[in-house]
Image 1 (spheres, chains in turn yellow, green):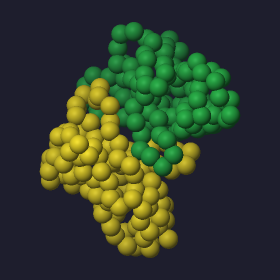
Image 2 (tube, helix red, strand yellow):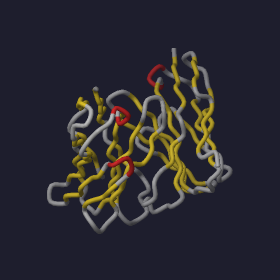
Image 3 (cartoon, rainbow over the protein chains, first blue to last red):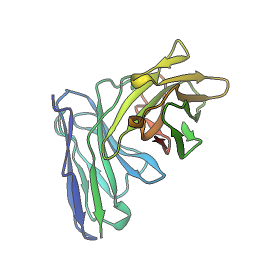
Length: 114
Length: 115
């Protein structure tokens, strides 16, 4: 199993550009989520999904869109990048919706917006 | 809503010394508690979790944590640290039971083990 994979590993954007961060898992997990990590802020939840076709907002959703057309994939879209979105982005998944199991994290995408 | 406070942002220790990383949470309902570790330039991985039962939880790499309901704490301990334990450690809380899937993380504690 590859676990949770994320692409790209690094990305530099200019203000106003759009892009999609890719996330895929091969563990057949129902629950997937996106976090951003900023120095001194810990991880903050952006969006999450409890299954294909079902998504919801987390703590810091503004400026980001998600969709979940398959169980495996959960892409994160930045529609118009801003310098405040410079961060490290982590995708995570877990198999149970009750939240008692661990979340498996991808290796992260380091995004810089100029 | 639940919240997590990690009381120390940085903890420097010498190799083979004991360490305690402190975590306090607030929640009006029962909770599940987790400790995750992040090694440099990597994602997070689970160290241990408390769901119910025994308040002393043992995890990987010799770490353990104790759930204290009266003090709303979940401190992480290791009796003797190694250089390889240098990493950032995150405490996280989730509301127990029900359909709230969200995991709330603390801001992290950077553990630096010096030779």
